[in-house]
Image (cartoon, rainbow, N blue to C red; front, side):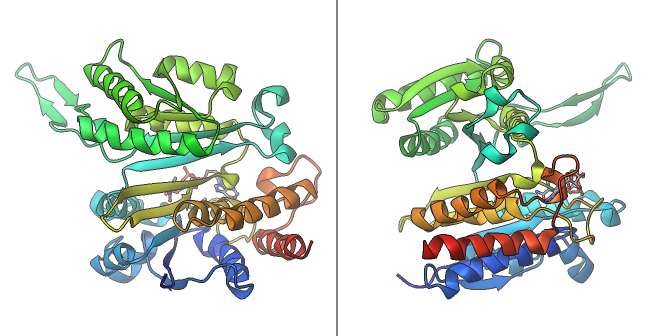
Length: 370
Ligand code: NAD
């Protein structure tokens, strides 16, 4: 197989700090011969706007389409608050997701034992927690037509959006969830509001059909979205894979991520459809933003981006052993008490971005030799 290509997009704010820390980890895998990549870098978000006047150029889109995987840090910041919406950093992010056809957003909510005490929930509820939320990303109410704000004959204004899903949109996200469950604990919970929405009725029917036709070995349950929000707080350990639409996924994945304690720890993956050769567009990114309040201080936590790289190894490059090794290194670093400020308990000493990245590399070295 030819050397895979990786496009690195540092973006804005703390992106220029967490990316070099992650790059050292990537370089460790390269220098030890465990993985080799052709790496290119590009601009996105405010960084692209400052140079090109737009948050994502056609050239960067072409680079992303050519790459086997894209690793993005984060975009945005107050510097671009007065820029028109179509040229804001966020528009660049939406465009790259759309251009790559990234319909499946994978958000693990994984609680590291060493950080379990930082969760907003009781220790016994979150210890060992490992949920994967699969959110449909390019359909549903965020994209449905018609949409808009109109003025009614009586002078009142009316805002409206359309929730809509087709069979094929439901089936392709369902497949992603069932396939993931097969590699995990074998359970999928499909979430909608079939009690009050026709799109939810169709969602439930299609998930049930797909399950019966292709995935009988996986356990399928259905849950209304409001109940799911409650259960995530009441008994999160009952879930393995949750699959849901764009809107509910947006809310439930943020909720689940907070069970784990810190934004600076959480990776994500967004995947497209596989082409005839099995090649699948993929973008990996931390779920946090550009953290303007701490940007430039060298204190951002790089672990979310490092763990996003681990997801890339697992899902784009089928390198489960390398992904396991990297995740184990992160576990050990945390278990040894090394903390950036965002995950430190009161009074605990902290390290900066570079030192945290270096600690992971050192731990990789140690684990590789043991
Ligand atoms: P944010 O995620 O940037 O920050 C929220 C809080 O979490 C801040 O206090 C920040 O300091 C902290 N934080 C975030 N990441 C951290 C890390 N790695 N280490 C330590 N602390 C961390 O969200 P926000 O403040 O709402 O948004 C700031 C900007 O980021 C906005 O312009 C927003 O549009 C953008 N944003 C981008 C993305 C993305 O790139 N995918 C996601 C969310 C927000």
